[in-house]
Length: 213
Image (tube, rainbow, N blue to C red; front, side, top):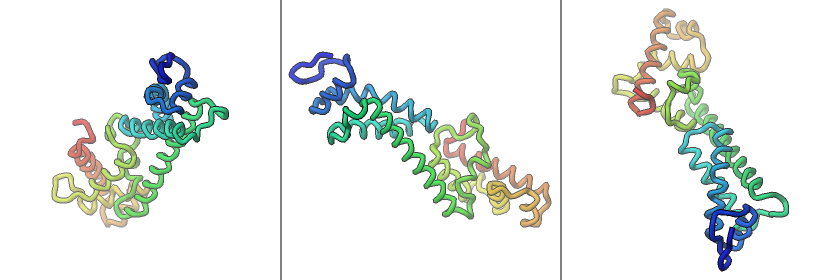
C-alpha cells in the first residue's frame, strides 16, 4: 500500500495500515476496509443463520457499519485485538441480535395468534422441505404470510371454519382422532379437511408469489 499526502492510494497492504489510516479520517481506507470485511461478515452470517440473500445483505451492512463506526468513536483498541477479530465479534453479536429478534417475534406471534395457529403452523404444516417451501421468506415474513393465508376470505383458497380448525389443531399437535371428536365428524372427513386446508394454504402462498408454479 502506498500513502500519498496521508491518503491510501491503492488496495494493497495490511488491514492494520488501513485501520490506522481510517482512524485518522481517511475515506479511502474506510472504503477498502469495508471491502475487506464485508465478504467474511456475510459468509459468517450465512453459516450461522442460513437466511436469504436480502437479509444477509442487511445484516452484513449492519455488522460492517458497527465495526467501522468503532474506528470513528475509537472504541476499537488495536492493542487488544486485530481489527479482523474485532469485526468477527461484531458480526457475531449482530447474528445473535437477529436470532433474538426472530425468537421474540415467534413468541409474540404465538401469544397473539393462539386462535390462528401461531408461528409453529408453517413448519408443522409444510414440514422442512426446502425445495417445496417458500422461496423468498425470512422467518418473520413466514409468520405474517401464514397468518394472512389463514384469515383470507372471499377467494377460492379461503379456508372453511372446519378446515381452519383441522389444520390448526394439527399444528398444535392434536391427533386427528381428537379433532374429529371435537368437530363431531368422522376421521376420514377430518383427514380430507386437513389435506384440503394444506392445499388451500399452498394456493394462497402461490398467489402471493412465494411458491413456484
